[in-house]
Length: 111
Ligand SMILES: [Zn+2]
Ligand SMILES: [Zn+2]
Ligand SMILES: [Zn+2]
Image 1 (cartoon, rainbow, N blue to C red):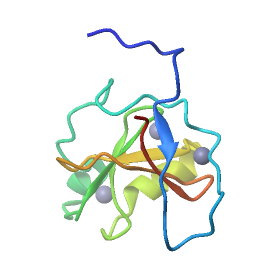
Image 2 (cartoon, protein in one colour):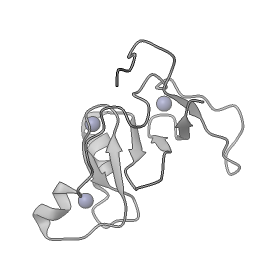
Image 3 (cartoon, rainbow, N blue to C red):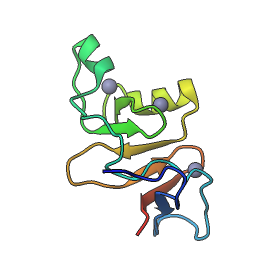
């Protein structure tokens, strides 16, 4: 299936009751869910250390898969801090939200 990389944004800012209204994100042109994401087998950095993770996040810029902030390694956040890649989506089955580290907003797929 073909997807248009220069089409409309793949994401919109999600309503978040715990945060002020009107926050924006300048990274909505990231690939929409289901486009070009690798299979998330696990957190490679945890696997290398022999530790476990709780949930997985996938970087929308490069496809890096790391563990969430509830995990001991927090490798998804570490990846953002190392690379500056702004957005990671949930790599959990059935979850389609993403988090923008730069703007600190939740994103959901554009309708
Ligand atoms: Zn953003
Ligand atoms: Zn990890
Ligand atoms: Zn990345």
